Length: 340
Image 1 (cartoon, rainbow, N blue to C red):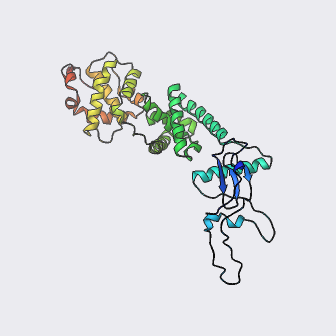
Image 2 (image 1 turned 45 degrees about the horizontal axis):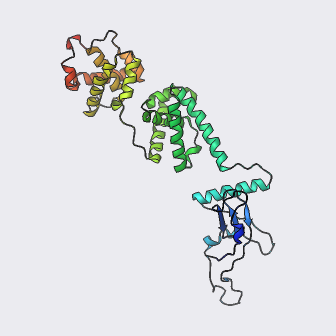
Image 3 (image 1 turned 180 degrees about the vertical axis):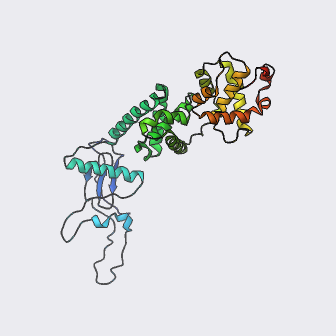
């Protein structure tokens, strides 16, 4: 590495008041502040050993410096025209990107253009994200708690993956809302999120659902989140479905047991989990002989599933009903009431 002489008094940026952000660009001998891009000192003297040899013979002798160490040679000082090139930073590392951004801002300032600081850009991005999340969550009647959880997830993601924070697809915001709702115990299924936001995205609900599912997996992988649990195990989702059907909360516990048993033993084939939950609610409501028994149409609407799908899940579960019911419920249930 070259031994470049630097004035110690200039290793502290007077603009940023930060000495830790000052680095030496060995390719051009410039002392640069990586925060604001200001060149504190240019063409520092190299006090290292002379590597050039002007003798007629042995021109390849002497100390050589790796091209990567000397920077971009095509942008160096032109000895014939005496024109001085600019310092250009290459590389894809985080440090290189920060230095490139600082130089870009410095060039804009020198040309009289506006300079946008990284902190200002982050604040603007967060403001836009918050507004979009509030819109997305609002379509599902979700409150501030979900929005705050989404903001926390976004900030975690931005610190780990710079590319993610620049994405603005509707499916991306929907994925955040789905993940946040499960963490806040107010689960909204991917299908529910898709149906509520399909019009805003200008897409079919089925297509948006696939995109949201993909985004959920991407975000979960980057953040190291545990994959969302099965819907049949989500007590809050069951309680919400039951409540929307105006049924008693006593239906929740046996209906959850039936859903989990049917799913665990694979008794419903490839039926969606939400269809299993809907069928379980219908079974328990009819066995308890509630006053206003739900129909297949009612439970299918609540679960956001086609009625035919719910009926197919119910048909598979019906033939194993005695096996699926919890023991404490079997003695209470009146099978004479019959099932639809």
